[in-house]
Image (cartoon, rainbow over the protein chains, first blue to last red):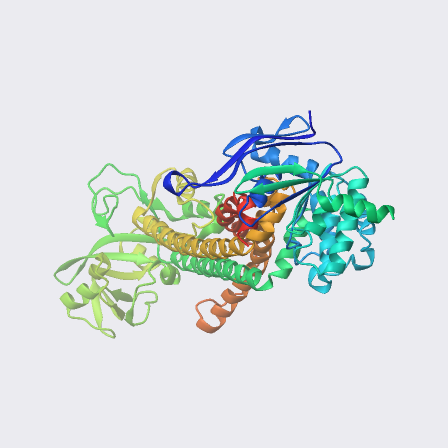
Amino acid sequence: MGFIIADQLNKTYGTGDSAVPAVSEISFEVETGEFIAVMGESGAGKSTLLSIMGAMNTPTTGAYIVDDINVYRLSQDQRADFRREFLGFIFQSFHLVPYLNVIENVMLPLTTARLRRGKKRDMAMKALSSVDLESKAFRLPNQISGGEKERAAIARAIVNEPPILLADEPTGNLDSRNSRGVMRLLSRLNGQGMTVIMVTHSTDCAGYARRLLELSDGRLVSSAEPETTSRLRAVRVA
Amino acid sequence: MDIKDIAIKNLLRRKGKAAFILAGLVIGVATVVGVTTYIDTMTAEINDKLEKYGANILIVPKTDNLSLSYGGVTLGGVSFEMQEIQQVELESIQAIKNARNIAAVGPIVLGGVNSGTQRVLLAGVDFKVSGILKPWWKITGKYPDTNQVLLGADVARVLAVETGGEIEIDGHRMPVTGVLHPTGSQDDQLIFTNLGTAQVLLGKPGIVSMVEVAALCNACPITDMVQQLSAALPMAKVMAIQKVVKSRMETLGQFKQFSFGISAVIALVGGLVVLVTLMGSVRERRREIGIFRAIGFRKGHIMRIIFLEAGVVSLLAGIIGYGVGITAAALGFRFLGGHTGGVSLDPVLASSAVVMAVSVGLIASVYPAVMASRLDPNEALKAL
C-alpha cells in the first residue's frame, strides 16, 4: 500500500447540463519520499487534483487516503488539522501575508501549535536557514525579491516538517536562475525524505521529479519517469 | 507568534478600517455616556427640585367624624368634634430615622370664623416654610405678621378687600398684607394668618389641625417615611399624597426611558458600523483567510482572529468613548446651562460603557466571523 492513495477520484463542477468534469477516474499511489511532477495542458485538471490532494476540495466521488487516513471522511476541522500536520503548501503566487514579516509568515503554520514563542522562532529560523534566507527574516514581503518570496514560501511550507510538500507551479513567477535555485531546494528536501508533489508546466522542472503524472482532459494518461530526469541524472553524474 | 499577534498586526496594517470602527463605536459610546450622564444629572436635579415642590405627606387627626375636604385630601372633622393634634407632639417628627430627608414641616390650624356676614375658613400656618410647601403661591403684597392676614383670591373678591385694606374676624380688625393670586385650589377660599394668631383667634392654643410635610424621597421610599411618622405620631393619621409621588416617579421614568431609547438606537448604529466594516474587511481578506485555512487554521481560529480584532477595537472605543462622553456632557452643561455642579466620574457608568462597547463589537462581529470561517480555502485561493 502506498503512502498516498488516490482511488477513482472524480470531481465535477456544477450540476445537470452545466456539469463540467474537472478530473475523472484518477487513481495512483505515491510512496514515501517520492518526487512527483503533475503536468498537462491548461484545464487538464492539475490544479483540481492538487487541491484534492491538499484536502481543500472534496472529490465528487472516489477516495483520497494518506497514511491510512481517508481524508475526505474527516470533518472540516479535522481536515484543517490534517493539512497542518501532513502538508506543506507552496503556492505559485507565494501567498505571503503582506503585513507579517518573513519570519512571521514562516511561523504561521506554528501559530496554533502549543509551543513556546522561542521554540517557534527557532523552528522558523531553522527553516529560513535551510532556504538561505535568515538575513531577510525581518523584512516585509514587499521588501524582498520574487525568488526570496518563493524561498520564504518554501520555508513556511516546511517549518513544521510535514511529510508531504505540495507545490503549485513553484517557479511560475520566477526567472530561470531563481527557478533552478527553487528546484534544487525542492530536490534537496525530497532527498531528506519529504514526499514532493509538484504541478508544473515546465519540462525542465518536471525533470527534477522521479515520476511524472500526465493529465489530459481530467484523466491520467501516463505515469512514468520523465525523459529529462534520466538526462539530468546523466549531467549530475558527469 | 500566535493568533493575538495576527489580529493586532492586521489592525495596525488596516489602520483606516480600524479607525472607522473605532470612530463608530466611540461616537456611539460617547453619545450613550453623554446622554446618560446628562439625563442622570438633570434627573437628580429635577428630582431635587421635585422633592421640594410642595408637601407630599399629610398628617391629620384620627377621627370617625364627618370631614371637610382640603386639597383633595380628607381632613378630620374640623368644623365639628375634632380630635386635633398637640403642637408639642410634632417635635417627635424630627426624631424619626429618615428625619434628614424632611425638607419642611408645616403645621396648620383650621377653623371657621365670621368676617362680617360671611362664614370663612381661617388657616393658621407657618409662613417660614410656605416657600417649600406652597412654592406655587404668588402674592400681591407680603406674608402677614402677627395679627395680620393673607387672603385667598376668592375671599378677597367676595369681601371686596385688597392688599393694604382691613378685615374683621370675629370682632378683631386685622390688616390685609397680601392677596394670593388664584391657585385653583381651596387656598383661594381661605384666610391665612400666622399659626399663633390663628390659634388665639380660634381658641386652640398649642393645637394644630393637620401638618403638611415635604419629604426628600429620592434616597428613601416615601412609604417608609409614612410608616416612621405613623409610629412617631400614633394619634394621627399619616398619608402620602400619592398623586405627587406618582407623578414624580413617572417623570423620572420618562427620563430613564428616553435615555434607554437613545442608548439602544446608538448601540444599534454602532453595531451596524462594526458589522458593515468587518464584512468589507472579510471580503478584502479572502486570500489571507484562504492561506490561513490552507496551512491548517481551523474555523475557530479564523473566528478568534475576527473576534480579537473587534474586541480590541471595541475595548479601546469603550474607554475613549467614556472619556469623550463625560467631556461632552460637561461641555454641554457649561454651554447649554441647566446645571451648576460638575459632572462626576461614575465607575459603574465607565465599566458599563466598556462592557457595552465590547458587547456591541463582539455581537456585531459574529456574522462576519462566521462568514470568514466558512470561506472555502480552495475557493478563496482560486478566486485570486
